[in-house]
Length: 141
Image 1 (cartoon, rainbow, N blue to C red):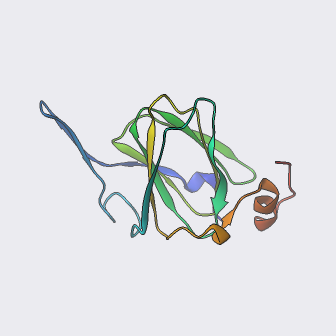
Image 2 (image 1 turned 120 degrees about the vertical axis):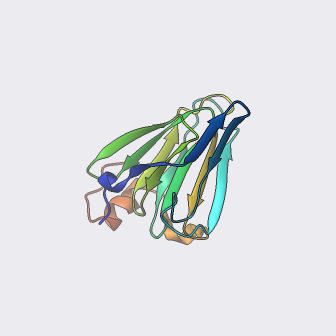
Image 3 (image 1 turned 45 degrees about the vertical axis):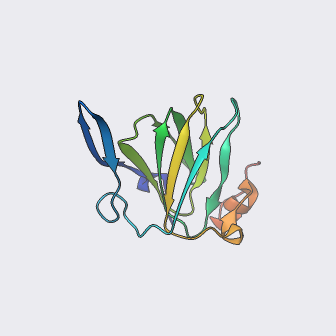
């Protein structure tokens, strides 16, 4: 079973010079899977959280393209918090981890690479269902 301890930071290819900054994300060099879907979360109103679910089969890498936000991940026993502040780094989050995106700065843009095509039926939308899928006693939500 996956745990929050399996999440990790990835350093992307990040080239800075007097012309600006170019950041590259390459499959199997920076992204540890074949990318099937890219999406970005943006124009999030102050105080609004995003995500609030888990995926049964989807692994993801999240990065901030602009601004900042925080990522909370939970496995039912352990919670970890990761600030996304640097577009030159990404956060790998494996499947079956509950994820919450919060504290978006004004204008923040979060880019996500996923190893599957989105299928709502393969996501877990309530904490109770997540706890049951992981064999834990539900603790609310």
